[in-house]
Image (cartoon, rainbow, N blue to C red; front, side, top):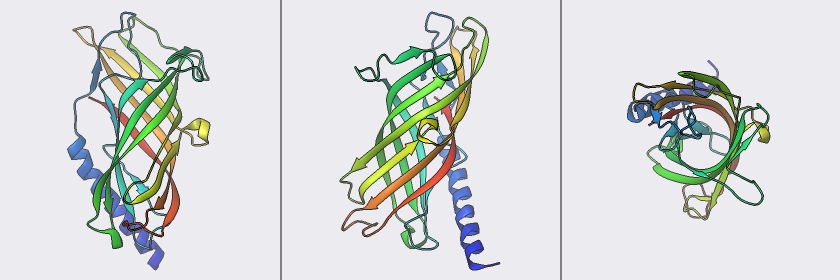
Length: 231
């Protein structure tokens, strides 16, 4: 096996191991939300979060050979985003014909280094602007299944001890196909279980901060990760 193949195989094994570990940590009950009074639920699901229990983000480009940064994400704290530029939080229609949801949220990344960064662990929190499109659903039905699309997901931080800048950009409107689907299942108490997931395409860009672990380094790594709603 060539050296490059050995490095990529090692990286993949590390990613799988960390994904299994984070999956155990993130094991949580399904997302359950109240009926919004119209026989369905308001999305994004309040009080829930999107996790990647079997996958992780990775930073590879801009690092020494054999070195990666594994990022286990939690996407949470959904808040309506209404302004003169974006309009209401929820707008009927959109590319899938149902509605478009505009909101802010928070991505919490648990970072773990490999290779020369082995043993480096920390948390990075990034505020996000998000837009999701949904297809029509049959309000009032006991089971409602419809397509969704992560149109925009983007945010950045600056001035971090290790990152002069750290930027996440994803979503179909940014050129990264991010399809999803949602199934709402009504429970005996009238609430709905929300089975929602997205296959999010993204790029993570970073510039290392002077004096930090990544000083003098920068890069951009593209990838795709499945994120699923959980309580």
